[in-house]
Each structure stands twice: as C-alpha cells, then as structure tokens.
Amino acid sequence: MTEKNTFVRMASDPASLIISSEDENATMGDGVTHQDNVSADIMDRLDRMAEISESKKHLTRRCFTPQHRQVITLVSGWMRDAGMKVWEDATGNLMGRYEGTDDKAPAILLGSHLDSVVKAGKYDGPLGILAAIDCVKALNIRNARLKNPIEVACFTDEEGVRFQSTYLGSRGIAGTFDFNLLNRADKDDITLAEAMTDFGLDTDRIGEAARQKGDFLCYLEVHIEQGPVLESEDLAVCAVTAIAGADRMTVTATGKAGHAGTVPMGARQDALAAAAECVLTVEEVAAAHPYAVGTVGQIEAEHGATNVIPGKVVFSVDFRAADDAVRREAVNDLTKRFEDIANRRNVDIVLEQSHSADGVTSAPWIVDAIEDAMTDLGHRPFKLPSGAGHDAAALAEITDVGMIFVRCKDGISHNPDESITREDAIAGAELLLRTVERIGGLET
Ligand SMILES: [Zn+2]
Image (cartoon, rainbow, N blue to C red; front, side, top):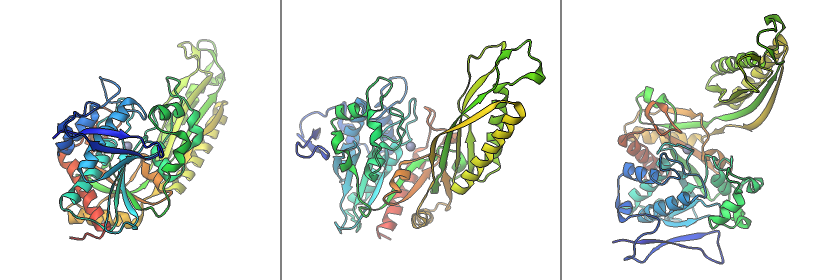
C-alpha cells in the first residue's frame, strides 16, 4: 500500500492545518517513499530525517525552509501510522494527538524540535520526536489508552539559527511568542513574517497556537545529553533536574594602540593582554562555582596587526549555572574581577549584557517518575542538570516539565560527529514510554 500525504489548508481556519492521508494508490510527495512509513527501526528513521538537508555536504535544516516542509511530510506519516490525529499549528509546529479515556483530562505533551544548527548532527531534536512517536505507537499496538491524552509536538525552531530566535515554536504554544521577531531578517534578507507566510502560515493568527495552563499535565522530552557525563558514568539514560540559566555578555576592552617596537612595556595599555586575563578569569570563576560553566567563544582585536599593540578588543562571555543564585553570584564576582583587571592595566572594560535567562527546574514529581521508571527497566537511577537550553524552558511557563537524557559519544553535539548507539536510542524511547505509563496510571 502506498499513500499520499495531502496538506489541506482549511480556509476558515488556516491556523489548524489538517494533515490527512488519502489516495491509497497514488505516490507520495516530497520524496517520501513507502519504506519510510513502514520502517520500524528508530536508527533508520533518524538517518532518513538526516537526509532532509539544505546542504548536500552536511545536515542543515532551518525553520520554514522547503526542507522543514519535507520533514513535516515525512514525520506526519509516521505519526499517523502510530495512531495519532495530526495537524499543524499557527507557528508551524507539527502536532499529533492520541486520545485517552477521559477527553477532559489534561494531555501529556511529548516532543522535541525539527530544526537543526548549521552542520548539525543527526540526533539533536529528531531523537526526542521519534522516541515520542514510538511511545504512542507502542500503546496503540497494545490498544492501550491512558486516562490522559498524549500529544506530540515537533517544534518549528528551537536552535534559532535562521532568525537568532530561540524556542519559536514552543513559545508559540506557551503564549510567549515574541512578535518583535517578525521583522527580523535572515541572511538572505527574508523576514520571519515573510518566511512564515511563504510556509503557508498566517502571522495574524500566531496567537492561536497558544495553549492554556491546564491543557497539559506535563511536558516530557528525550534528548541527547550533549555532554560526556553519562558516558563516564556508564549509563545509557538519566533524568534531568534542571535547565541551566544563562547570561551572555559582549565585553569591550579599550586601551591604547601603539607601535609594537617603540612603546616600553611599562607604558602600555594593551587591550588584548587585558582581555586575555579576563578569559582566564572566566575559566577560574566558573571552576570555583558548583555546576557552573563559563566560555569565551569569540574574541577579536580591532585592526589586528603583527606590529601594533591592540587598542580595542571585543569578546563574548557565556556563563551558565544550574542554580540561578550561584550564577548571579558568579557573574557578580566576574564583573568585580574585570574591574580590577581594568584598573591594574589602565584600560576600560565595558560589559554589555545581550541575554539573561533564569534556569528552569524539572518538576520533582516528574524526576521521581523517571527515576522509578529507570528502576523498573533495570537502569541505575541517576540525574543531571542540563547546561544546554531546550524547549522545556519555554513550556515551563504553562506546565510542569521533565527531560530524559540519552548518552552520546564523547559528549559531541552540534557537529556531524554527533553519535549515539541503537541500544541507547531504544533505551531512551523505552524509558519515555515507561515514564508515561507511570504518569498516566498504567502501572503494569
Ligand atoms: Zn536540541
């Protein structure tokens, strides 16, 4: 049996694009083959999703591109096959629903994101989506219904690569979509509003994607760890306790440019030497605080030349900690130490904050449920905070959140070398299913 994926845009309600399957003898659109819809193996499906890329050389899949549309077509077929009703919401999130026995009960929301960074790995995002689909599929095969419906969200844009936005889709659902972003242009000068319109969405109706507090019992996401801890603990999976808060700053050090040959060492105001001391200070301060990490990822000496003492240097600081109080104290400490460096070296150091977000704590009852499910499945219970941001941070505005991490090789992520094993992918999906069964009252 082959089938065609048809997108029907309802004239009266473009916000809820219905995705239906019709025409059993027709061929499928967008290069989707019959094999895609019958393949049961999670690794095969991860590979199939990774083929949908803007580049032939590496995986790049930004929001509202033709490849985003293509991956929606592919994944919506798998969602339907798993037993879900499928639709697309007003911010382009692909949504699915598997009814429970009580249609008034709040839904258990599962999901992850469809977009990727530039030159991405295969697993950041898609693993969580496929684990969620497998969870519904496993219940459907057994003809099992929980009291609560299950919804699966495949978020439009989590990485924020195209429009320097974060959590575009999950903020749409949380009702915190930033409308100022609509005028922001990508590198080809296409605004977010234009991109959404081209994608078939109506920007006047974005608000309709918002769900209410009480629509969901909780949000659960499976994601690769993107760090090396599970590997060192010899564990396939764990529960996530919190998503770290983050501060990002642009720091400008201004000294005095001069001739490298003529200005004596004692008379210099070297902005780069001051910045170098700041970089090491970021490292020292982060190391001195629990679960804190600090990074200088960009640095540039203005008009850099071999024979010129740098007069102006701009660098970035990214500082994160699982505990907000720890992060604030550390950033305070960092600011004071930058002042000392500026005074001692006779340069100006100005910090400009570009981003500040508090951390989000997983609901303790969800962490408990995940750890109990780990025990059920023979895993040693273990939990970790997440240093990276995830859609759960946006959804915490409207519901309790929790996450499951899956081990990835050498902690590498946001890179083509991202790697997980089939066994670990299955362990993540099974742990999600067991956790959902526990939460939904299926104890057997
Ligand atoms: Zn991700």
